[in-house]
Every structure is written in structure tokens, then in C-alpha cells.
Length: 139
Image (cartoon, rainbow, N blue to C red; front, side, top):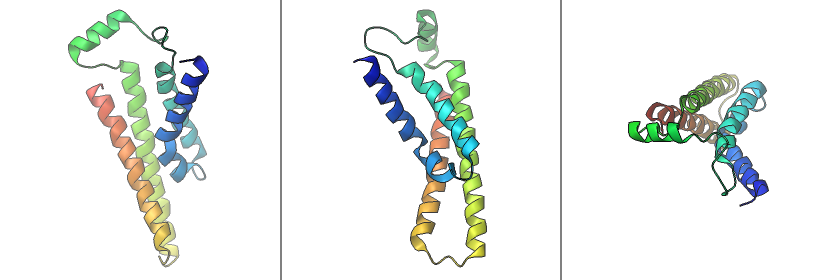
């Protein structure tokens, strides 16, 4: 795999992992969306390399210790994942707050809009849970 295709794969992964954040927060919370994108980029940077060798962050001693403790990610990676969980949880709460205020202001007649907004809140919370659980369990 060439370097270009590995970075294209990383860019696709960044977009996929941040899709709920983009959909619910990019207009009203651009700084939050930028922080989430930067944090996911840090994670994807460690995963994107060609098959000719290990990633720039590879350390054989750390890997052997991690395998023995059943925690296969570094403490830095865990911190980034926890940070991402906080970002997605905040995005969900912020989006829910904006949605509830707009629902009071207008009579909720637009069913599809409501479904989208509830789906956005759920997807942000789901991704937040994924980040929190993978950070907690180290996998």
C-alpha cells in the first residue's frame, strides 16, 4: 500500500468517525467540530502507514507490556479517546438543548426534522460511548 492510499484511507476514517459531529455541530459549534477532527486525526495518524514497516509510534517494549496487561493502546491514546468521548457527549447535549429550544418556539410539525435531530443526538452519544469504552478498556 502506498503512502497516498494509506492517507486517503485515514481521511475516510476521519470523515466516518466524525460524521455525527459534523452533522450536528459544524454550524453552531465550529470550534468543537475542529477539536474533534484534530483529535481523530491524531488517532488516525498512528494507524496510517504503509505495509513496509511499523508506524512511527511503534515501540516493541511498549507492545509487549501492553499485550501482557491486555491493554493494547497507550495512555496517550486513551486520553485522546476520552477527550473525543467528551467532545461527542458535549455535542449531543448542546444539540439537544438547541433542538428543545427550537421545538418550544415552533410547533413540532416537521416530523422528518425531528427524526433527524433525535438521530443526531443518538449518534453523537453512541460515538461518545464508543470512545469512552475503548479508552476505559484500552482496546
